[in-house]
Image (tube, rainbow, N blue to C red; front, side):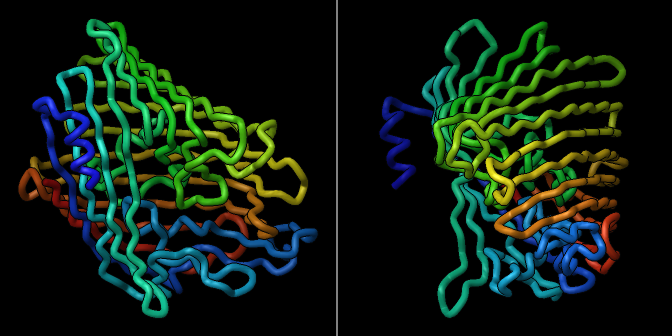
Amino acid sequence: MMWCLLALAFAEDPSVRVSGYLDVGGFATTGDGVSYRRDPAGEITDHPDEVWVFYGDPWAGTVNSRGEPADLGNDRNNLDRVDFIHSAGKPSLLVNTANVSIAAARGPRLAAQLSVDLLPRTGALGAPGDALVVDLAYLDMLPWENANVRLYVGKVSSAFGREYQVRLATERFGITPSLMSRYTVGTPTGVKLRASALDRRLWVTASLTNGGTTTSRFGHFYDELDSNLGKTATARVAGRLRGLAVAELGVSGQVGSVDGQPDASVVGWQAGADASVRVEELEVVAEAMLVRLPADLPDEDFVHAHGGYLETRWTFRPKWGALLRFDWRRAEMRVVDNFYDSNVGRVAVGLRVRPVPELVLKLEYLGIVEFVGRSFPDDVITTSCVYRF
């Protein structure tokens, strides 16, 4: 039906293209697959006034490019969370994502794109756990014929930082996203503008959206439809130099009413900087950011976080590549009376091979270290086989 509607919208001989990808893999974890632990009465983390205190990071043990953890564990009432994988520490095969995208264009100045993710997952008590996620749904317009400015309206990609550019399994060199990606790679609903100048040496991306760029899996700080009057403004400015090396430096900022807060005057913000250098088949990418999502009252949800990553990608043969990434996140967060004191570092080591242009095979190991609390086993080894069509 949705394809028919798009075809009707571009009925005068449009150019229609159907594409997508299939990402399948398998993973194994140490321990029980849960990458956080409870600290009773704040005995370890020095938060004696908080009743339910946790350390570690529930989203550190990711197993795929979607950022899904092996297991989210149980909440303070011992009830299951919304946890699509819930592996209980056991190795498993997994269809990470089956994606179908359709794009329809009416000349070079007007187009539409719809991208849908299908997620085969386990249900409960006979109910299917499978999910359908609308990843992108937007109009793409070129308002001025002789200006390099594009306007996107609908459910659009992020305008913050650079990791959103490689958020999909088909675009990401390795498998797992960084620890800070939860704040930057979401696809909000609104208006986005992207422009370039100085022979594409200067790029400006800006958006005005219902909510911020956090992912839907970080649900307490995510709004698809706004629940307050405030909107979120996001912008990134980047400069690019080409020579023996290709270098890019960018700065990003975001400000707006905090998602989930009914009072629009509760304003959150985040700021970041990113850099990349590519010399032939070697690329080094770095990104750092600071996040402040405050609460209106002392006992309401909030996040104070900072962190970043440094990633090296090396294609050492035409079909082979290797990845090394260090990332870190320091955060204090309250969610529904649960207090998280998170100070986590990770080392990611990956290998990839592309036997044919449409297929890439990836292997990645995540070593996770807790700098707050006691260390516990929560490392991850994961694989991904991505075929695009």
